[in-house]
Image 1 (cartoon, rainbow, N blue to C red):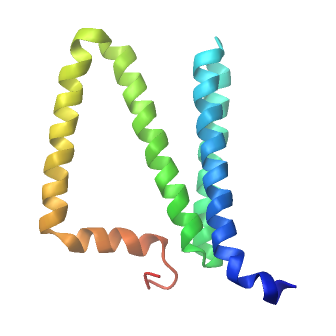
Image 2 (image 1 turned 90 degrees about the vertical axis):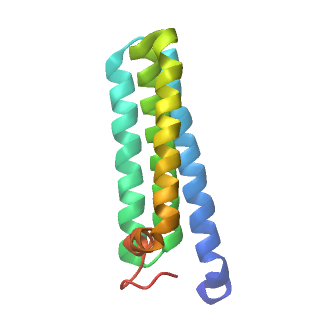
Length: 135
């Protein structure tokens, strides 16, 4: 049976990782908006980040780059939304939009840098690879 299901292993791993990441994002955001207790928000985020770290570690150790890359994508989504929500709450309405403009400008310069130095992206891709070989 395992030989028959072997072609579907990587796809099932990525799909399961996407569902885990999406469920964790919804849970962490819902705990922020629906709960009035800071402890609920902290617990939800710690559990979510622990799950992402476990998925990235397991993907790296077990040779599943899809699981590692999925965890990295959902970590960046979580980080962007958490930083954005915190900035909006901390800066208020008037100062938020200049901060968005500054952040967008910084990302634009980062994209220009990465375009002229593609080796940096390759070195990031080898972090989630097996034996240093990007698959």
